[in-house]
Length: 396
Length: 81
Image (cartoon, rainbow over all chains, first blue to last red):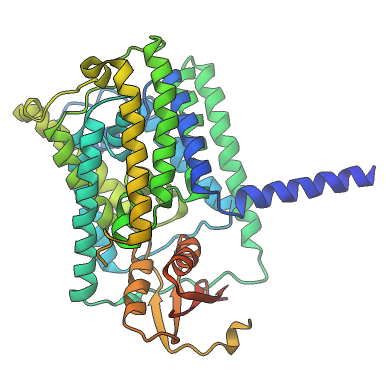
């Protein structure tokens, strides 16, 4: 009997080290994300993040500025907001299980960059009709033309943003030594074990939340919490970062994240074609990204913002879950600015001028959409690989 | 290799900074150094543990050693290639 228990213990240790010690490969995370995103699409609506931020921003502004209309949906019943809660909790639980959770202070200038980055991303996401997830990843994957223009905008924005970071290193005083790193915990007290138990508790609480939602007839919302939890785990363990896909080609030439995002998109797009072409979900579902002006200019502004903040909509969430205080400030300014910009766009009628959602199969038919979709993504990978070898686009 | 035996020529402190600043500063610092010299980077961002080795491998610099310090940060020793 003891040998059985020994083997079981060994299996647990091996699994634990595979999941919570070794970094997951980016491409594998890309595959997981595509599958989870497709499940979210089938379960409820195409996945997005900024919509949830906007809901939070609506509520923050409602309490800050008197005399406003009460937002219609509470954060715990708003589908994208609940997915975000799940993502945040999943990342935090994962960070704790991986012994990587720590409140991480940053030098003052980083907070300023975080706040400005959040403002730019909030405004950019409002113009583009979504963030790097809803406006780019999901948009491309569900064949909304705005996704491609936002992709171009993100690339240009990342280029400009990197230039700004280089300028900062050159001309602004660098005082990183001012930050006091909290000394490691006293050896007499094993904090990491407590942290791991707490992480496991968050995972269990997240799953329990699904059952609670289901018990009050909100199974669909509860499921989103669960999917968010999974995304948080996948993103944290792989350190999945959309910013890298747009920044690294100019910074180090590394093409790993481009390949991961493109591969993920190919899987997601093929799956969503099955879902849409067969009318499991309406073909034009989620196709509202303002093509082409809004998504291009929004992507550009968002791109600059994500470079300054060091995180996009998704990595701001999971990095906040890991304890980066800079990105918590980004999250708040992102939410508030996004809410305010959306209201402004709606009130002034500017929204109509940005463009409207265009469904690719409506324009060029499904038969041409699929090969073109795959061709564009393959070209992106080939361009990034060529650049990795030649470093032609690396500006630093 | 025992990290206490490595004698670094330059020290770059990026404690408290998060991605991409640690890598950006490391790359900039390495550019200003002569080949063969050793740069010691002190950082706290968990992402650097993948970024810095990956960058060294690709960029032709040698990561001699990396180790967690008892004070809560990680030390990286990079020989400029």
